[in-house]
Image 1 (cartoon, chains in turn brown, green):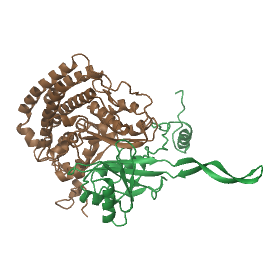
Image 2 (spheres, helix red, strand yellow):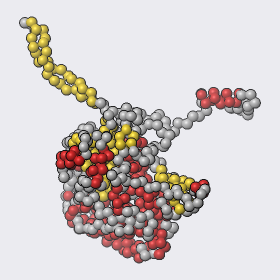
Image 3 (cartoon, one colour):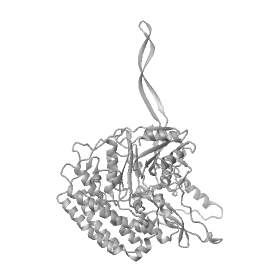
Image 4 (cartoon, one colour):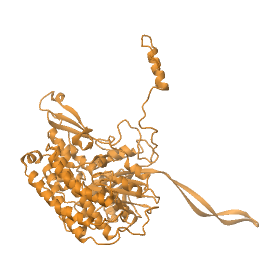
Length: 384
Length: 223
């Protein structure tokens, strides 16, 4: 029986008495490179990492328990706070799970709006990630400012559509909350048309940069087998060559209508994870162009649907979407009451961190920061 | 491959395993497979190696409280009528109590066949908070992705995973004793409670200061 092996800590010593010189340091929880309150207990042999144990829970507020004491709709604003960079995809994941549980259909225009907002979210998440990753590598400030300049344009779109920049609370079961204001779609088309300029500029400056390649190529390699076994999802899995994009596999929403490709990496190192985000943004732009061209008129939610007093019939459902960070799943059990009996979030960031130790062993402590950055975590979702 | 054929193939290949299909009445119709604890690791390995369920996406626990079911039944009884004892149909309420249990659900997918989800369930005999009744085998040796998620289930539900390489609390701090996702969890009055100088603490303090050779007890409200 083949079993999975956990990483063996590299505690071997080339000379006797060497163990005494191992240094255990606690990186975090208040460390700028950990992207939030997250701690790693790292054991170092000189600069080399010989053991790494992540410590979670600093931002734990038991979101699942709170949701069990709340109505179905009452949890919708709270899903914004999971992965607070990408609130719209969180909304969609939750709405999708509830719609599957209760058998609700979504009008055409709402499906298009969901795809548009979700792909815009993917753009802003990946843009922000690239900025943060370069910041972690020591390219202080400038790349991050370039990325945030673009992110700001998308946040402006979100603000005029939903009323909030980050905590959008936009989806409803069976549709969306509000329709687009006048001129919004034209503005979105303009942002989408301008976005490739930023990508070209960023790629020109920071793709063949020698220092960047030196820091990232061959560092933190994740094999395809380990990625499957550890249920790594999203860009991180695809950088390791695993062809698994839930937009293609499940074809949820109206994604089968759009033509786009799934970029794959072949090495699984940080550089591949970095590049895959560029390529995914280009594919997202293709989807956005098609969706913004084809979006029909019509209702955004069934006018007869009643959001209050919503009680799905007893049963359970696991619904998932391809979030910018990976597979975002919601598992709901209904017992026929207005509150879910069980509400579970499958957090992609937490599960992608399963292999953090495997990626870091044998590398320098400075690489830990970059490897963690390339995993792309948001602690609001890791700890929930 | 539908669930019934998966079940029959597993029963043929893993001798002695007891499987049961749990129907899901929701429109999505994700029916699940309940597996007994003794054969769970073998069943999981078979699912991974031969039925291509290589991707264990989601692991979570569910706490099912004991339920009281009451149903109305008609019972024939001899009752005293005007013409002596006679048989009559009488309505009676029969109450049956279903014991509670804890459940762990694994959502399996296949990256090669692109199928799923297959929810795989395991149940404990009851939900008493003891190690004997809340132990089920860990599936981390089969799917590495269970490592953190089983730690989370252990932390929040109190279910022990036998064979887990590193079973520690994940989200709550190590000194915490309860399991907050259990349905009967009562949260403390004040998470921030710290003993301050009142009552017992003050009495201990007084005792400390009054020992011979100790400093004089500081009197408040003056120099």
